[in-house]
Image (cartoon, rainbow, N blue to C red; front, side, top):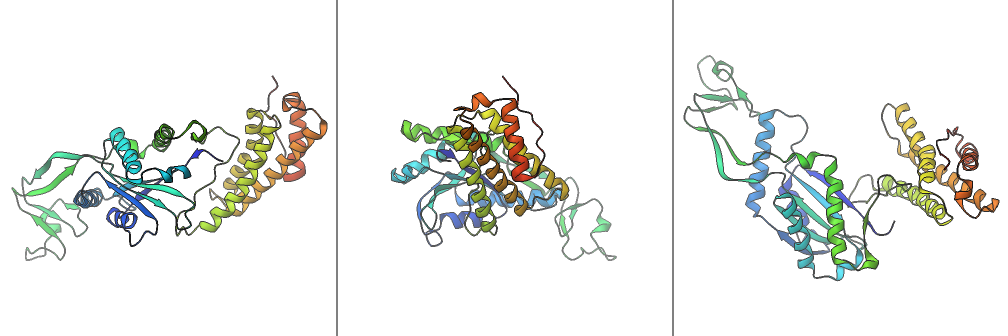
Length: 349
C-alpha cells in the first residue's frame, strides 16, 4: 500500500559492530549521511555496563546493548538535503525520548529503498558515576557472579581458584555510569508510538499530496514485510508478500465496488485469521509459512469470487447486500474456495 509508514525495530547484541557497519563508507555502497549525538566512547561504555549488568543478574539469552529503528522514507525525500534531513529526524527522536543516538541515511543496493538506521540507547548517562564500596572482601566467580563466602573461591591453601576474582574491603566493586533502562522501549506500545512520531515528522516535510499514514491495526488489509539485507528468510518473506499483495489487491477492488470496512474485516477474520489460528494451534504454536500462504491465497480467491457475485447480481453497491445476503455470498465463497465452514458475524444495519 502506498503512503504507509514502515518502521522496524531490532535488538542489538553488538552495538559497536553495528555502528561500524551502518556508518562505514567502505561497507555501505549507498551511504549519504551519518549523524551522531554522542561520542563513540559513549557507546563503548554503554555496551560495557550493559554486559556487566547482564552477567551480574545471571540473565539467560543474549545481552541487549542498544536498539535500532529502521525507518523507510518516501522516495521524494531523497532530493532533500541529506545531512539536514537526517539531523531533523534524529534530534526530534532524541528530544522526545531523551536518549543518545547515532544514525545513517542509506539506499539499499538496488536503490529501491531509501531509509534511516537509527541506533539509540535505552539508558541516559548519569551526571556523575555511582560507585559501590566494599565493606568487606568480596569474591567473584569466572562468570562475574558474586560469591557469598570465601571458601567457595579459594583452594585448601587459601589461594584464589583459577579465574576467580577478589575485591578488597574499601575498594570499588561496582560502578554505574548510566541510569537503568527505560521501560518504555520494552513495551508493545513503543513501536506504534514511534511510527506515529515519524509519520508526523515526514508529513511536516511533505506536500499534501504525499502525506503518509500508519498502517491501521483494525484493517481488512494485511501489511507486507520489508526484506532486509542478507536476511536468511528473504525468499520466504518475498513469497509471503506476494500472496499478501494479492489479498490487498482484492480488498482494494472490494472497496472500489462499495464494500463496507466492517464486512471486509469480518470476511478477513473468517477467511484468514480463524484458519491461521487453527493451523498454529494444530502445529503446537508453530506458524508454518506454506500453510499460511495457502490460506491467504485461497482467501484472495474467495474474496475475488464474492466481488464477482456482487457485481454479477447487479446490486451496484455492497450496502444493498449487507446482512443476510452478504452472509450467503461469503458462506458460498468460503465453502467453494477454502472448504472451511463459514460462521457469520456480519450484522445488518
